[in-house]
Image 1 (cartoon, helix red, strand yellow):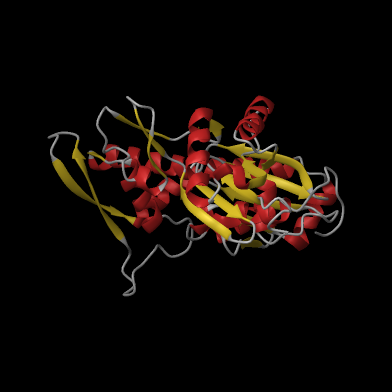
Image 2: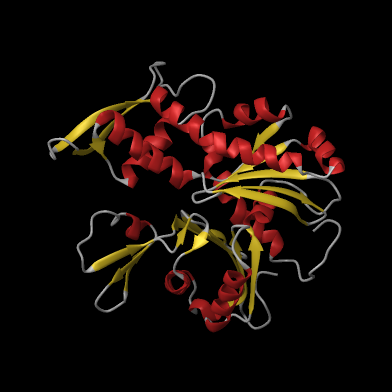
Length: 343
């Protein structure tokens, strides 16, 4: 039930490095914005959260600080996570955090037991005694359309902002998982480095993100416009030699080279995961294939790239960016610690 006897509701949160997504039972996904917060240094009050804070990146004076409380899948500032959650819940719920019956926070697999305890403590301090932490890879599998509760091997590649998580799931839980910090944020930084080296142009993270979204690809035809012309991007930044504003034209072919170099690390992590999979679960992949979730699933040619490596069918989740938060819908219904069967 979405609403409990006491009028409170269940809430699922995908607390990602790049984006914060919030699911409220009975209302669906109600928030999908960057995991960024801007703070007034003098008063320590919240200036902006989400999209409003993202617009301030690289454009603020020294009286305002823009913070990403998660970096590379690791919690760098738990107090700022508290501020983001409290600010957002006050915005979304009439009674704020006091309206929440159960809070499910989905985090990268590699967070430590200490970090998990700190997050549960944070939820309790906010007034939600039923706070639970779940692995993103498990939630993303459910959100990707997989029935994880059968004794059958499923492999998910979740290419997020801070990390790429690869997990093998069977019988309702994660059998094994590996991760690499080569993911969306890393791609952006490599694009920035490339512009510096080849074009002698310094650009910001927002510009690098736009270049990635428009031009990134791995195999097959390069991204083209409606007239079959290979796409380019007019990158604006600062000339490293003159120090003056300048534009450089970036091509899809050079961005593909960067992406392929980045994906070598993801490829290695995938192969090392497959090498240690129990043989029975490994055999299941012949029928079940591999599911890709996360923002990286939208990169052109990613399906074909992994099919060439693993030689099994690869599918992209129907809503890859929402997969984790969509998975919380099922996980919020589970009351037991151990389970078997369909839900």
